[in-house]
Image (cartoon, rainbow, N blue to C red; front, side, top):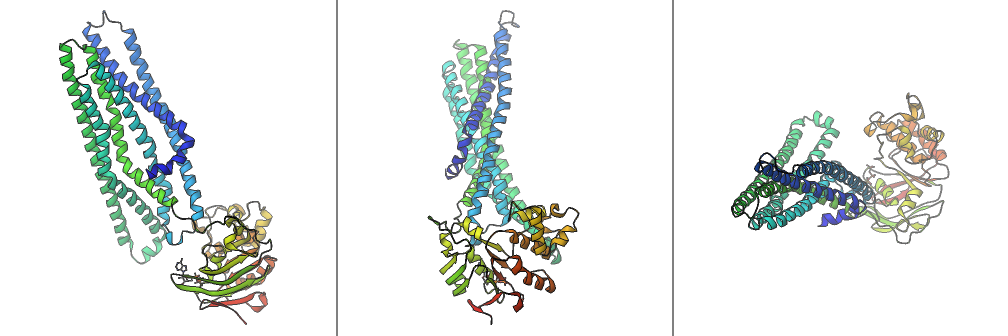
Length: 552
Ligand SMILES: Nc1ncnc2c1ncn2[C@@H]1O[C@H](COP(=O)(O)OP(=O)(O)OP(=O)(O)O)[C@@H](O)[C@H]1O
């Protein structure tokens, strides 16, 4: 139910498509049942009247042709309309999921393995379509067709109607319910195993070199095979239960047919029903069970569909990171940055203990300190990637908790240690920070980041496609590309976390001396392990034992 509630708002814009698809499903099933019924009646009547000599052939043969044509056309449009509506819904669902992830980033402690996240956005979304198109449509269709058949049967063969009703209720209610109850757990296992397989594949690809160097291919392969076996066992169980359920439906159809035949022969002997009508009724009963077969197939996928929808629901239910202020305030345009009595730590270990820091607009500050002392964490507090346990971080005179996230991100820009290079051209990688920037500005930023010469030497220059994880660049070049991106941003406070990682000392010193000029007028807070010459013009601070102090 919860799952349906999740999907309902997304279903609303497509209700016409789904309704039309449902109507076409019912029309297809009805045409199929009527076709068999009329054909049976027609053939029997023709045979009984001596090769049709005294029988009007025109009307029934036109009905047979009309019904078979209706069935073909309605089935075609049912697929067309149904799939169109479902694919649009799935595309809306993906867009909605993807956009709902941004307010929850970074995931931090709630982190999901990236393969799992990817699986939720792809495989799980696809599995959800079973819930809508393949289950709900056939279920309603089956109810309508079986009800109609029962009413017709009650009129022509009253004794057979309750037996048929019992059999068809068994086929469209009891069998699918039992099948769902028996296979639900295995649907969950299949979805979980598919997700684990994605995670294991991604991990193996990313860590292939280390896995090979340390000779761990065997255990890694073993774990993967174990997951495959779990998936195969779950799917095998699902398959065998579907076969059993299909057998049950056929057995119920047989019972209904046999009982109708017995009642029909008795009624025939008493001349309460004609032979052609009886033959038509038998074939129509057979056709009405077609819908329950589709329902069994859909029910088999229902377990995986529900499990997938629950995983999607868990994803959108993750609490957003930080809260947006109700009445946001605007920071000053040329903002200062102030840490007032700020404390922060992870799990009781303070990395900042009542720390104070004031950076005036346009000032440049370099913070050093031992590895793991909390320098990156200090930068994360400015962008509210973490919120202080005590004290206040203010930008432009306003506490960051009072500033709308979008405004804060326009004022403050961060080059983190994990800044990514996207699978795209150099130009598009840079334009993330400044979508309107022209080539001249891009070259200026690349030159400032000491990467211009390298990119100019590439045959396609700014149009060069960079590989996944910037495999076509060295680690130092990838870092400089990210630095160029930050330089392009218009933020007036620039946070740089180890901006010279991967550079040789000479280039590093050159960059330290030139950054003040490149970032003229902007405040810079740089975290670095490298020693900064006094002449570079930075106020130097050290973070040690959770305290910030000036380097004399
Ligand atoms: N998300 C987290 N959860 C728990 N502990 C964390 C988390 N992030 C960092 N830490 C811990 O907080 C401490 C400070 O980490 P931080 O990355 O800020 O240090 P750093 O000074 O930037 O280190 P380095 O110079 O090596 O980059 C470390 O002990 C680290 O293990």
